[in-house]
Every structure is written in structure tokens, then in C-alpha cells.
Amino acid sequence: MNKISPLLYNEVSILNMKLSFLPIVFLLFSANAFCADLTREQVIELLKNATKENPANLRKKDLKGIDLSGLDLRNANLWGADLRKANLSRSNLEGLILDLTVMTGTNLKGANLKNVSIFGVYLKGADLSDTDLRGSRVIATLDKANLTNANITNVDWGADMKNQPMGLMRVTMNNANLTGANLSGSSFSRGLMRFAKLNNANLRNANLYRVDLRGADLSGADLSGADLSEAKLESANLTGAKLDGAKLPEGMK
Image 1 (tube, one colour):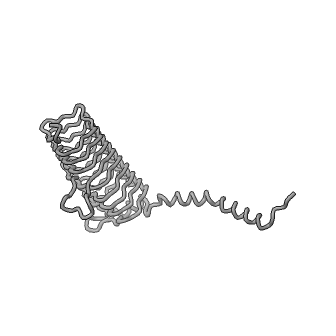
Image 2 (image 1 turned 180 degrees about the horizontal axis):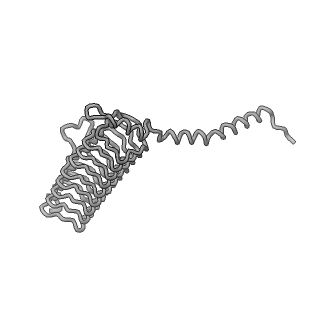
Image 3 (image 1 turned 30 degrees about the vertical axis):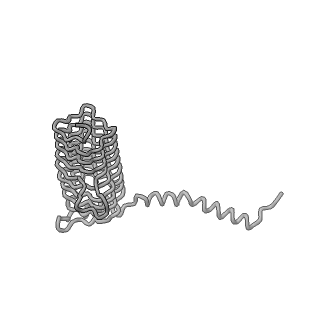
């Protein structure tokens, strides 16, 4: 019977030891993947004495996965914070500057987002259902976001043609769900809404100039008085949509 050399035996033992540590390393890595800089309790403590003039400093903080639901965050500085997968449902964020934050998959359901600024933000897959976004200025990526029943009335989310040093900055809502949302009187000019769900949405008097709506579901939507001039509507579903007084693209008039 062949004997295993001491050298080979040692190498096998070391390999087995390394392999035995792999699950521990994986668990540590997984834990750190969503290890926020602060806890909910620490954020609440920071907010106690915060004011508009001296806000709670959450600027550029790692807040991934943290539960901030129901909190009044109006006196917080969240500029550039990492809020991926965070729970901000029913929170009050009115008037905040949320520019350059990261909010992929963030839960903002029912949040107060009136008069916020959301510029250069990635909100793919975020839940903004039932949110109040009146008066907001949003130039962000909202692809696959849930905006059902959101209040997005009288806002300007259109491309800023005077400030384009890095190319066309515009809102994108490709494959977003805006079923039943109120977008009346708002501007989304030059935005991207390919394959968006806008069925039964209120788009009365909305500015949809040059908006890409190819493949979008606009069935039952109210587009009365909307500006759809030069919009792309190939393969869009307009079944039952109200188009009274709307400005339509050439070829649809």
C-alpha cells in the first residue's frame, strides 16, 4: 500500500483548512454588503436636535438596507447618501436635496417627496407608489420603478436644454409602472417612457413633447389637452384613451 508523502499530506491539510474558512468569509462578506454606517436609533438621535440651519449630517453616509420608515427627515442632509434597499416608506422628505443619492430598489411607498430635488439619481426598481411628488424636480433613472397612484402633478421633469454640458440629461421611466398615477399639468419633454404602464393615468395638459412612448400602455389614459407633438408612439396602446384637444404627432392627426 502506497504511503502519502508528508509534504503532500501537509498541502492537503492546508487546503482543507482554507476551504473550511470559506463559508465564514462568505458570511462576513454578506453581512458587510449591507452594513450601514448608522442604525435607525442613531439616525433618530441625530434628528432630535436637528434644524434647517443645522441639519442632521447624513451626507454621503452608507445607509443601505436601513429602516427609516415613518421618520420626519426634513431636517436631514442626505446629499449623496447610499440608500440602496433602504426602507423610507411613509417618511417625510419634503423639500430635501437628494441629488446624487443612490436609491436602487429603495422603498419610498407613501413618502412625502413634495418639492424635492432628485438630480443624477439611479432609482431603478424603486417603489414610489402612492408618493406625493408635487413640486419636485427630477432628472433621474426610474426604469422599472413602481409609481402606481403617485401624485406627480404640475412638476417639471423635462430635459433642461440650457444645462447640458454632459449631454442630454432627462428623466427615464422605461418599463416603469405609472398605472393610475396623476401626471396632469406636468412636463416630461424629451423623456424616455418606452414600454411604461400608463393605463388609466391622468395626463391632462401634460407636456409630452418628443417623449419616447414606444410600446407604452396608455389604455384608458386621459390625454386631454396634452402636447404629444413629435412624440414617438409606435406600438403604443391607446385603446380607450381620451385625446380631446391633444396635440398629436404628424400622421396621427
